[in-house]
Length: 427
Image (tube, rainbow, N blue to C red):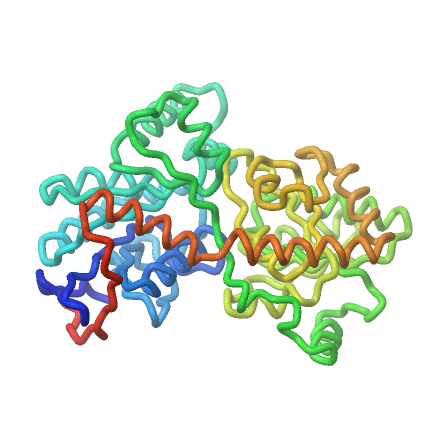
């Protein structure tokens, strides 16, 4: 979609100008996984309270019909690529910066909401002539992610450069939002005291993610379609199939429980690399127990999670958020997880934890829940209540709006009610 042209006034029905936010997403939005869900649901929640949001992103990805999206030009030499760190992202980010300058030259925005470090760097530099406040949506350490994806190696000069650049980027914006309280504390302890840092936990739509999304007959039928017996205890995973997500640990845990004679199936939902992980499961002798579905559209995620009895979150990264945990909680699924800061922050005392990377303990925690169906039910019910009370996207939108108004010195005494936009997008 091309850039929308807004009038400078843009009055609402109440006679007040609606706040206009340009969300920079240096990724192939929308792609049915955690980071993208946060970008989408933040935009929807802001829209619900009368704030206009446009998303600027790479050329590849699915358009969401309820959110304005602007895309970069295609790169002629690399039409297909997978998520994660890639040298091709340098070119994508150059194109993103060019498109951003073009958008700002033709349109009026009050706030730039930049996701990820690349977005914060591009947004902070390119927007300077327009003096637009930039908010940085921090979702984890840049260098840690690059190490997780194998793009950087430890103890190298390149790592030192990227660590320096990461710190420099974190001092550019007007405010920083982090996906966890732990991330906020880490940034402050790292010496970032000049810029306001606000924890903004991920959220979940508990009207969509709910335990009764399927009838008992629908659930039974869908389980059969995936080769799941009615008597099987089914462990579900939803997310990227990446090493730092702990997929290898999941497969190893499945092998341990199979060796113990446990009757348990593992429904692994996500992408990329499905063929690789199927081969790993086959080599470990659990291809009959681990079912890979490949990519699951976001709108189908609740129906797929409803097939499970237990959820698992074997994420190894100590710096990234873990939004899938909230989906599990809203679905009423008891959750076994590695005790990373983000996952402990979301689950609290309702999580069933194993030390990070300890496959034997991970398998044991799953086995305990298999043997304790009543505990599964009570943990799931309590997790659902916690998700509803503490992690709604409306709460996140309110926190975002408060900072936006502070940075723009806007009057918050009159709620905004936005007219339907009749402007034709313009390139």
